Length: 288
Image (cartoon, rainbow, N blue to C red; front, side):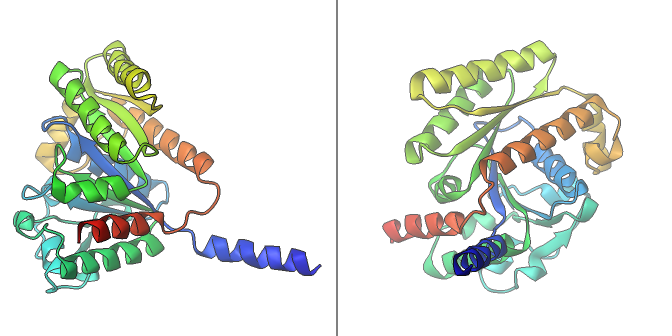
């Protein structure tokens, strides 16, 4: 009986310690619709009852708030330099989504000095305890300033298009991260596909390349079509998943979100420990 009671207490403790998943949305090159995907992906997650925070890490070119038609008085830079609390740089978007703007001046502070790194860790620890998903909208490509974060997050969502340069850059991005962490979870999607066949062919080629040359299996989420509603929603500064709920691209996105959350639950049925934070701390300590 004592063993059963102890096991029950341990289960309750593990459940209480379950932390939010950290996700980085990346692309090998610009112009593939990464930020637009990040916005619609997170608002769709929020719509199904998940607590989500979207952090704009597109260094020097943050535009998440612009996609929402908002002017934000504070951003991540203000928090990192100690001028604001994390709550003061968070704003509410559609479907109760919370977001943090990167700000146009963020590039000048992303040097991972001790003070800013400690504040970053404090913020991430707070967010992990209070949100189901922390989604980082990363800048195109990878830099020394963002690599620590990419290697530390739980999941990487890679966006490509069918263009040869985009495919090559997406593969290079995954290979770059893979060599830093072979166990990283990769989720791949093709954006702006002109047909189902084009999208399927693109993701299949990348999946095969990762398997053949790196012996790494990745998860294909599917493809999103080239759809004029995307351009119209950007112009209206409202996510297409909200402005056009019956559009084909919105339906495909909902399928992606459903697939992602089901895969995430299956692979992580044991409540995760604070691996994201510990990995980030470990990487920074090596550089110090």
